[in-house]
Length: 418
Image 1 (cartoon, rainbow, N blue to C red):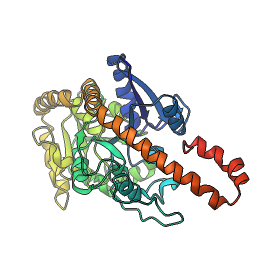
Image 2 (spheres, helix red, strand yellow):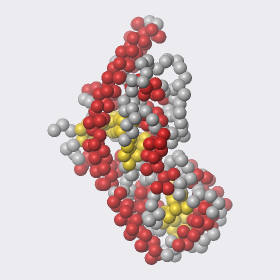
Image 3 (spheres, rainbow, N blue to C red):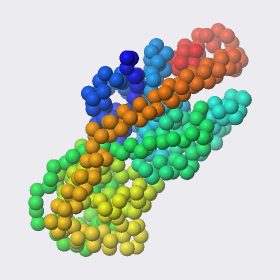
Image 4 (tube, one colour):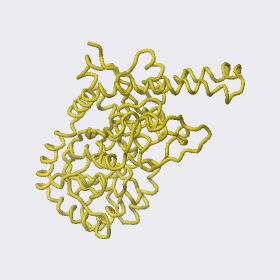
């Protein structure tokens, strides 16, 4: 039986990327556990260990892929994914569904709404050239429209998708979706000490509520603050620590899951506060839970959906620091922390174990293979129709058949348009 060919799109060289972390964690398991099932080719926007994403179309022409698998997050290193998704729809794993930009230059004037209408036979004509197409945001409307199958690492994002998305290319109103949690990375237990050691990886910005955390710590004795930051944030972080008179702390630099695991190894509990529709708690919260760390979350957006049986929640607002302070005092009880740790580990191993996540992704591929193969076929037909229209139209704008052949035809071929 022929292997299922998968074009896997992932950033490389960005240690803080959720997509890169997922790929580095799950791909080795997939390749080992399902070695006879999948032929996976990795595409990125550089040439470190993979093929450049612009070669995916030519590779697809030579030997068609069955599945195009994309990961999407609100990060510059994922911009190439947003570009290629408009060239070839596929299965999209959303780590973010709200974006702070409309994307890189090539898609800023994307006529995606017209393409969606055309693909669903709601419009006969192709998009008008030299026309300014309004981009809708900050929700990922364009990216959702090109997702043949939508997968989410956060249940909150999945809820927003079901609420906001209407039509999709070649998919109409069928909005089936999956929740696939991010895998956690296991950390070792902290060495016992007289102080309660707190792990935190939020930015020194108001949405991450660090000012509330530091206020709570400053009002509580025997607290030590382990803070994972980017090097560029160090000055701001130190100013905040000084402003709140927090003297027992340690700064760790370069925010990544690997480094978070190191922070957790020196900590008793973790705090994951976020009061924003942008971003999510993963994969840091998953690593905290799978490592058995009692965790404090903001009861907002993605944090709302975690059960209070496994986490402590605080309401954002005037009493936020007081709530955090009371929880910290409660967690000074080592016996209670141990009891919580066992319960949390049991839950997290069932849902965030990398082996479990890899098997769930395999099930999604199994369930949706026929659907995405049909999507590929229909998209190829739509692209052939667009290509025919473009070839007829291009020389008219260029004005000289020789110029068209000498300067532009080669680039059209490279992009798979000829």
